[in-house]
Length: 353
Ligand code: NAD
Image (cartoon, rainbow, N blue to C red; front, side, top):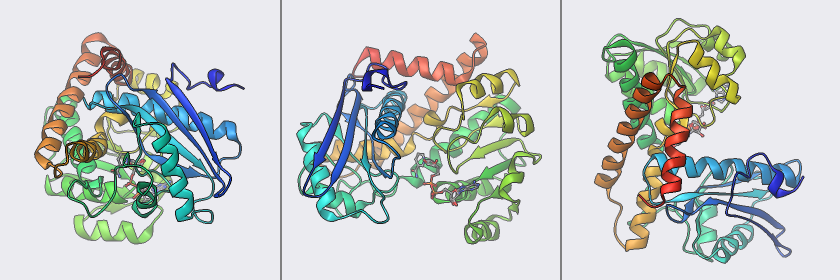
């Protein structure tokens, strides 16, 4: 299959393949759109089974970043990079320097950051060869861990969904939370403080008991989270939590959580709509993290310090967009993810905001 035939190609502006013989680097940088500004999206290191799998993943993730950046009203386009390799055994500083040279070769049309398998220390090596790197530590523009702001956006998004679907605040509402990692554990604290009742699951026992101690949450095994009696299901673990199979079991009327790619298939989005569930589209409600990264890019470009008030203003605007999506879904009798995609595509077509 050629690059152009890949299901996620969908009018990508450019796809770059890099090979560095000295370090063994094999990387793809996919740029979906620069209509709203330089493309921004993290770098993932993964042992892909084939080059085609790496290209397909880069294209899928890059297009998703265009949508996420556009709904968050950032002056950034969408891009993503992947390094083919095992992050546990094949990482070297030289490899990430070579990756930095690859980013530099794209000439500022792509900003990289962390993603699965890539750490701030790796990016520090890349930074020796290019300035187009966000997510570093120890400088005035640094945005730090994005998880707290991601969790804050999800918390406000859940409150918004509860107000719309149940005409009440979070006091006494039951939330089934899947995954209490960086985002889920902070979200649990905020929901508990707002008076919500929590049912939590994770595959990490230590993380579970720490959150349960702090919040009084009820713990259930991972497979049981789809069967509990709750008002809200908040997926904050891996992608694909919402499938036609899990939808048949889920009882909450609201699905709102931080995980990326929650819908296992596009049909799942239609199916949950037909079941009468209110779904906060994942890339809208979890956009706090990319807003944080955008604040770092903005500060680096201007030679200024990181500005939390800019982040807060963007987060508030994002919640306004989420409210608009929920409202239009109701008024136009269409699934929320379809409305969100339409808003994103219109903003991308309209160029810089
Ligand atoms: P994390 O790795 O810290 O947490 C994920 C948690 O899910 C872990 O505790 C893990 O043990 C648990 N988990 C894995 N498989 C599970 C399963 N089958 N059942 C239950 N729990 C399971 O990651 P994170 O940073 O908290 O991110 C969570 C999700 O949010 C991811 O999908 C991520 O892509 C997305 N996201 C994160 C941010 C951010 O700022 N960190 C921003 C946007 C989106």
